[in-house]
Image 1 (cartoon, rainbow, N blue to C red):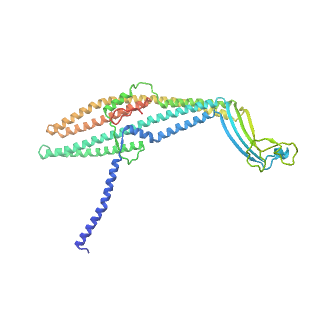
Image 2: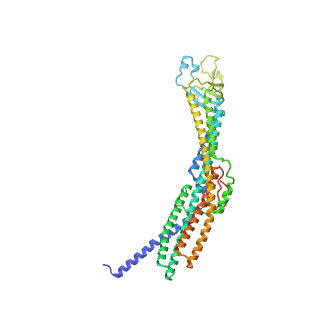
Image 3: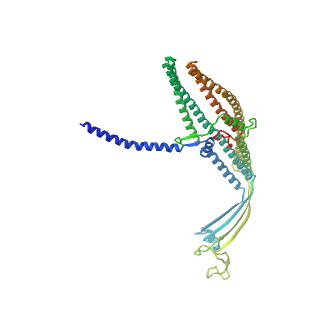
Amino acid sequence: MLFPRQLSRRLARACTLAVLVIRPAAVVAQSNTTNRSSDTLRLSLGDAVSIAMRQSDEIGIAAAQVDVADALYGTARANAMPQLRFTSSYLHVYESARGQAVGSVFNQPNTYTANLNLTQPLFQGGRLISATRSADRSREAARFDEREQRAQLTLQVERAYINVLYSSRITELQDRNLALASTRVAQVEQFERAGRAARYDVLRSRVERANIEPLAIQARNDRELALVELKRVLNVSVDQPVALVTHIDSAATAALLASVGDTSGVPDRASVRSAELNLDARKLGVSVARADFYPTLSVFFNSGYQAFPPIGMGFPTSTGALTTDACAPGGVAGRTCQNGGWFSDRQLGLNIAVPLFDGFRVKSNLDLAQAQARLADLQLRQEREQVSVDVARARAELRRASAVFAARRQNSQEADEAFRLATLRFSRGLSTQLEVSDAQLALLTAESTEARATYDLFLAAADLARALGRPIPIPSSAGSPATPR
């Protein structure tokens, strides 16, 4: 059993130990919070697009496809150029049938060879030229595909960025409405104590504030989800603090709309150009396949040296010659023998190959190439139709967004004036709380729709620029359009 004095001492020791343990943890937590705040990524819309271009997997794949197309073009072009190769070999014969049957002159146990082979194709039925042109068209198509992917990614980043701005604006409006509702509750309670308001007015103001609070919480949650989606698009860590510095208002949207210029022009989409180049490549592929029906002609020139040293001589180091000194002692007088050195060996010739029968392989390749050309033609038609639909839809959306934007700006100004008048009348006892609540709800709706109309008009202008194949203007952090990317 512990006496009160002993119990108090143990409690004091426990409190001291808790302070010593908790205080360093609090210091570490405060230090981590400070570091996180100092590492906040201040992100403008242009910076977001640049980060996406560097880190996006889609852009990486498109760039890799361009590299593949460049390599294929280099391979196709190399087939039409002269081919120069150096070959060398060593052969040791243990037993020669020709030497046994004809004579010992053919019985050379060691053979060294070093040759330079030069080959130049002269006629391949048009295969080499067509293959090179086809690879060049495919290379250009891959570049246009990358350009189209960049435009798509730019618009995707702008949508995600603007969604965060819109969610932040709604959060701001809901927080302000919640603060106004809290102030009105205090004001109505003060009126009740002064005898100027009934208990019903107090209850109504409290219920109104309680109904607004979940909407404010939901707005904050929507903003967090929109920010997570933006980080996902940018391939940024979810734990990375981000602060958006680009503000899109009515002036920035009007400037962006003006920078788009004439929207009635003919679209010049990279996807259509890519489809056209793919069709040209497929048509050239038909010529490549048809070339297998024609004979091929090439010229070759070989220049090298061969050495046939006898056993025990080792690697030859001298120029080959026929001398009497190279013969073994005791042989026929006046006989000449090779000295085991290097003898020159040069050849020039023509190769001609005429296809006679290959099991209908060439015909099958031609049928495949023609089918691929028809498929590329259909894909080009389909792409042109899709672009026409995209342009028509983007133009219609821009007209709708422009009309809504013009109407919502005037409506927001009038709703703000109506709310200020209703608040003034309520503070002087000339109106009821219901009138103020209706005016506040109307103001919230007007400002929310104005923000939505502003962002919709911005995205509609950017989407139309993408649909027309034009560079998408990107506003700077101050709100004015920057250099298109």
